Length: 230
Image (cartoon, rainbow, N blue to C red; front, top):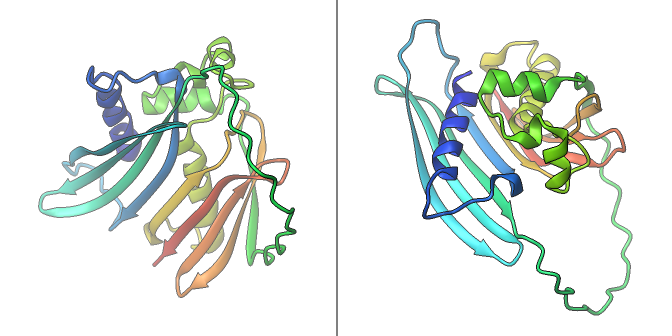
C-alpha cells in the first residue's frame, strides 16, 4: 500500500502545482521503474519523498519525470523513477505527410519461456481507486472517460503493473514476494475492466526476465518490461 499511496500523493502535488497547469483528464502513466531492497514489516515507520526531476514539452504533449523513495531509518527500501504523459490537445491541424516507407516484415519474437493468464475483475478500477486513493475520473466515471477519448473507464497503470508483478511472483518465485528485486514497465495501451491479460516472460540473464503483458487481442499493454528476481 505504501507504493500506491506514495504515487497518489506525488501525483496530486504535481496536478495541483499552478506552474504546470496540468489537465488531469489527459494524463496517462507512461513508465515506472521500481527497485525493492526488501519487504516492509508491520509497525515500521516509513519516510517517503518525491522529487520532480523534469517536465519536457513535446509536440505530442508534456512528459513529466519524477523520483520516489521510501526509507526505514537510514535504510532505503524502495527507489522508483516514474514518467507521466499529458497528451496534447487536438489543434485541428492535419499532420504533415511523410513519405511512405517500404513495409518490412518484422522477425517474429521468440516464444516466451513462461506465461500466465490474469483475469481483471469487472470492478477492478473502482476497487483499486478506493484502495489507492487515486480517484481520477477516467478510472471510475464512464462519461468522463469517454469525454477524454477513452472507450470506457480504464484500469490504473499501477494496478496493471501490480497484477503483472503478482503473476511473475507466483509463477517464477514460488509466491515469495520478497524475491522481486526490480520491476520496470512501459505502458503501451489501456486495460479495461473484465479483460483477460497474458503475462509472458523470457529469460534475459541470471535472475533477469524480459516481460510483456498482452491484452485479449494479443497486443502488448505492458512492453519493454524487466523483472529481476533474487
